[in-house]
Amino acid sequence: MKVLVLGAGVIGTACAHYLSGDGHEVTVIDRQAAPALETSFANAGGVCPGFAGPWAAPGMPLKVMGWLFKSHAPLLLRPRFDPAQWRWLAQFVGNCTAERFAHNKARMQRIAHYSKQCLVELRSATGIVYDEGTGGVLQIFRTEEELAGGRRAAAVLERFDVVHRIVTAQEARALEPALAADVPIAGGLHLSTDETGDCHLFTTRLAERLRASGVTFHFDTRIDAIMREGDRIGGILTHRGLLTADCYVVALGSDASFLLRPLDITLPIYPVKGYAITLDHVRDDGAPRSSVMDEHSKVMVTRLGARLRAAGVAEVGGYDRSADPLKAVGVLDAARTLFPRAGDYEHVSYWAGLRPMTPDGPPYLGPTSFTNLFLNLGQGSNGWTQACGCGRIVADLVGGRSPAIDLDGLTLASRH
Image (tube, rainbow, N blue to C red; front, side):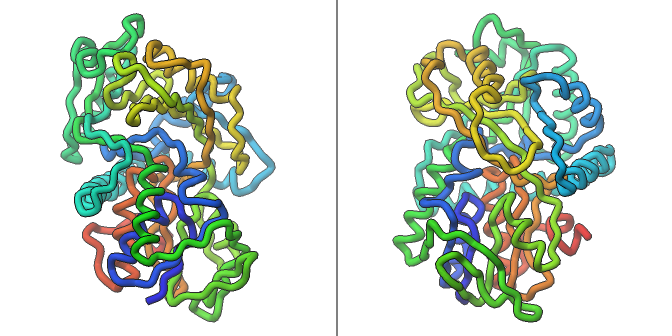
């Protein structure tokens, strides 16, 4: 079949890889000039199934209220006159119960671990290199209260058979010896099978391989509308003209809602902005060996080859993509506090991206009410972690096959 994939971020490009591998004639379109220039460009760099879980959790509404008047809080709420924002927030709060959290955590763990398996297989089959690291991820807790929360999180991981270990402060410093001596550490949680890697580099190099194998990419192409013909999609209207195919996959992140709404497909996906800084040259003995997640600041600091990436903050404030350095100060300060000798923090690049978040956590995958329209949306902060698994699942569904994992709670039909 001819398959048209909307979106050339890591989600769309990974999906195109599996569709092409299944023998389909694949075309990918994107409004940017190259792959992975929006949400996939400069994320934290963690491929972390162990951390996969919903932000909507018991106690979260109270935490958010406490952060409202803090300029460098992990979560920033910027109220707008936007009904979609308020609906999303209401659904988010509704999912902050123990029962809903458990259901959503299980669904996200299911897709995340399957996706890690798919990524490992893809890497082995293609030899693709993307500054990947397999040294695991260390979450550090600065207080006994944070450590107690880490122990509760470890009990949840136990139920999902996630490889993990609670470590002492001494063990944490042995794992990451460049951690600043004056940063208090009560203990840590080590996820030894989690990985790291440059999502943008992965997507770019995968797209290069796909183009060489015959996949077509149309960049600088704005999508204006998805055209319906009865119970089917007849084409994609772009500013360059109409593009047609036998089947269509929507992998457009936060902007997908605008294009799907005229089709009577309403998804609770809303953008949550994240901030990142990148140091292009790090001192080997001053940077993390792998990746450190600081529970206190909610900032992840990751080594990506010769570079250092720090990312964090969740700003619920609409579709503004600008990278305001003043709002990234918290990320910069956290990285400098944890790894002061990593490099020259006076010369960093700033970036901001919009995570396409669902209020309950899991993405939307698979079929719609239109026989030839499929979704691959809403991965939120887990896009890099979930990309390969989601791509494999959607390709299986397009090809009429049953995916390798249970899709309960991951499809449009099972969420309504």
